[in-house]
Image (cartoon, rainbow, N blue to C red):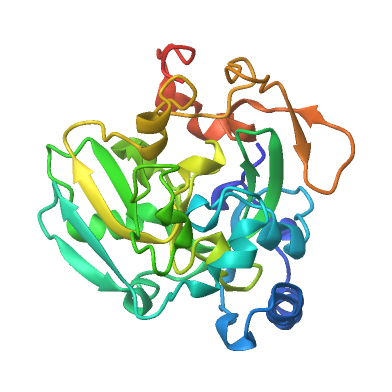
Length: 309
């Protein structure tokens, strides 16, 4: 198994506390400084986050911090890979609240700082695979989305979870262009959202999320293509019916609802069989479910994954 659950880990594999604390202190200082120096961010925006080392991690070497924070998709700030780092300084991640509504018994809004206190924060090292063919390995900080959803008690009618990002062209200048029908919307089946690997993320590399990476809160679904992991979330809505996502509305032929990483199903314009890890020259084979098949494959038992792509 590539992702280990607590019961699978031998004591010898767990990083000693004193070593981890020293590494954490180094990462916090290095990451905060790197954010300011490399991205032009005020250091006050790169707030260190205390988190425990989670058993949900891969052994792959993490992608350099600079690459993670300067090469990404976030169309609210522009369509080029370097646009988010250049343009996201207008985003104001405080104050911020997230509304949970729809098919729940206890709809409510969470202030972002209270939301972060719902559960102990963990550092999880996940692979991220983008539909264009590039990939990264990122140490995220957060806790399972299921923790939040249990707080609002989904009803028996809840079958799907829709994520709606902030819509504010003043803060997100890319929304002045009609690249997508704003706000950005994504969705998961309820069992996918409740899977322990589905992360409600508040940070990466020992600090709060940089604006260009989805501050102040985003979803990370490591076995799906990166666009499924909605950023800068303002509303989470539980629904009876499958939600219409932003990319399905824009181009249903290329962007299916499930969007599981599957090397056997090509994108209409390119193969998905290979990927290039950022920082590496040669391509590598794409893994089924991005390497998380042991953990999530049973969610799709009996499904035609070429039809439900």
